[in-house]
Length: 508
RNA sequence: GCCGCGUUGGUCAAGAGGUUAAGACGCCUCCCUUUCACGGAGGAAUCACGGGUUCGAGUCCCGUACGUGGUACCA
Figure 1 (cartoon, rainbow, N blue to C red):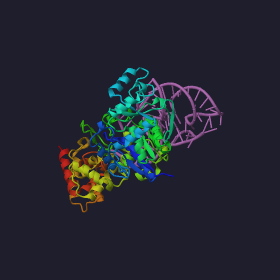
Figure 2 (cartoon, rainbow, N blue to C red; figure 1 turned 45 degrees about the vertical axis):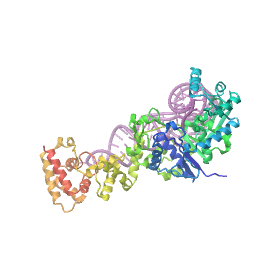
Figure 3 (cartoon, rainbow, N blue to C red; figure 1 turned 135 degrees about the horizontal axis):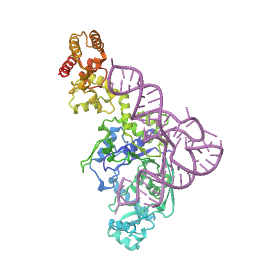
């Protein structure tokens, strides 16, 4: 009786994968894994005019980065292929014709121009968007309004035509949504949607029902923008395969930007990424920034996304993907849309950077460094540095600024932090300190620090007055871990060299 | 316009008739630290509005407002 859980993410390859899309993938994935089911990715490329080269590959790259791998897809294979709707084209016609034969749909011959004319002529202030529906269909060119012989002739002649669903006039269509509960529509307010286009491709409406059936989908999660067309899908299920075969629907709340629905424009406008990974539109060459490139960890990105509309009620906020799989529940998904908060997103990333061992992020940072021409020669040293500065890094990209001085002497010194209180005594202190360091018995943190403090005491200067200058000499600015720790890391020669170099600058 | 969905601090949110209405982000103050962080302790700030139902309503019902989605041979 219990069917194996099968869910699907069905993107259309028209551009970048944004936050909302990844969250839909995530909820699908979590639900599938939690129930020992399958997660399928089906490419909805029925609109050939919107095809964007590279978009499909990009989507799979994003999924791989996020660690949300499909069990079945055009890339991963599977028993229910093909997984691209364009490759399934021949499949759909017979369902459309079945609907026509049973009186649930009809052929329509109106040209785009004629449709536009109808909409324009019927448009009024009260009815700004006239529909192709029970009130207008008999005035249009279709197999309901035209004599049967003419229809047959047109069909035989190969005239361009579409198949439209014949929406019943006054029927209540309802279904139970996993998130919203009982949802009801009046059939009279939904139009006669095109099911099969003139080019023989199905529209989303037909394709989603046919493919969900053929692919044995048990639960269908999608964005709330689809809720309005759900009655079409419900009807199609009823007509074609039986309502009891229909998957359980869950319409996910929208993710909003600072001003309304989150758009890729918001990213540029407010300075945060909206796509998972960088996406360059091949036509406009416009680049939309991704979370990955901005310096996000996939762990943090996923964690943050999971909480945009869901929480387990316990107050825990940091979840690994494994924990999410076990704790997620579709019933605790919010009904209301959630506004995306970049500050909170950064907090998640910071938490994950602190939480993960340095070795886990080392490769990633190494690449970042390589791009800045910083060579990492010792992994041991590198990991130690990472551990020292982790707490100070919110984004992966912060590691450069926070640790570059461990690999090269600072290019610039924050002299303003030192000069106002600089004097000959301090200068003399550092001269002497260099000599002591030169002859130090062992280059260890405690020795370096003790020499410093003893010398300061001998010269009757407060150590605190000297530590900031020392820091500026080694780091360049007022930040970073304990200053003697840094000295012990970069080594004797380098420490002395930086102090001497800084001294000439301070004494100018 | 019509239809759908929604509405707890600035943001994410807990809450399923009786609570001083959790927690987190952000902001502010203090402590720790003679750097910056981390960490710790506090603080300001909320049930959209109006009617019901009830001994009692953030929780149930009805309106209104507002937000949001749809209204394509796009998904």
